Amino acid sequence: MSVWVTRVRSLPEALDSLDRMITVACGLPRPAWLGAAEAAWRRRGNERSRLRRAIIPVWRRPWMVLGREVVLPDEPYAFTETDGPDAFPGVEAALISGRHLTWYGPSLEHAPGVLSNQLRSPVRVGLSGCRRRE
Image (cartoon, rainbow, N blue to C red; front, side, top):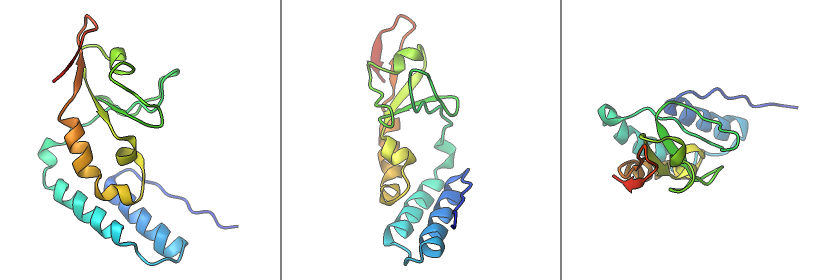
């Protein structure tokens, strides 16, 4: 029995791992979407000065998070304006596409644009609990 193990800690590692898994482990031709995804992320790489670090809750009850500032994906837990930002009063929270944040595959080609647009409209919950779109 063969086992394919990956260690991914950056976007370039993720793209390289996908390439090796598809072409080496599965013996398939390199898909066109992978080259398109690499190009899309490379274009975004030139905008590094605008990148931000984020906390990414992936579940609630109990809370499971990655990072330190807040983006709330719509999967695997479907965070909404009324369920999630309230746990982080006074902090900007962006509601984003979980598919474009964590799924490997063809969605990686469109992820830079989708996530960029969603990050431009954070939800802010005041200390009083009132929500507003920035």
